[in-house]
Image (cartoon, rainbow, N blue to C red):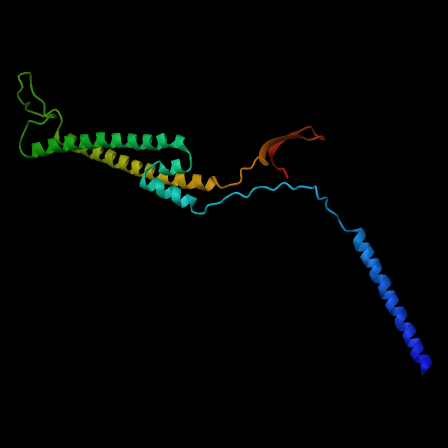
Length: 209
């Protein structure tokens, strides 16, 4: 009985020693493969870009309240004269067509009232009204319709220009938040095939770490 107990103790001691040796080998292997970083090593950290999710909405709202204000918010000041230039041109054209429409309309109202004193009727050398008007009633009706059509079209263009001013401010605010770091570059590339001498063109995208 004592021999069996002694043998069991020896076997147990050998097993523990064997496991201890294996553990030492694993620790030594792990130590050999451990990468030690130099304390003087510095990593270049790219500053995080501040993204304002409400910026596009703000820019669009500003341009809706006052045209060009959204462009000023985006610091695109050179666009402000373009915005107001387009609105001014459409406003002047609308005003001209509206005045022409009222001229033809007033002349028609005068003729329907039985008068011959409108500016389109015409007079002879002595200042008397002509027997037949220089511009007929049908001509005045067509001119009035054309002026009204041009006036309405100009109004549509002016509204579209106003809406475009809002969209431009919104899109600019979105684009300002894209990554335009100097390390990110898109350049055209030209490669020559070494086998057949053909030239191929393309675009290369590079990023510097």
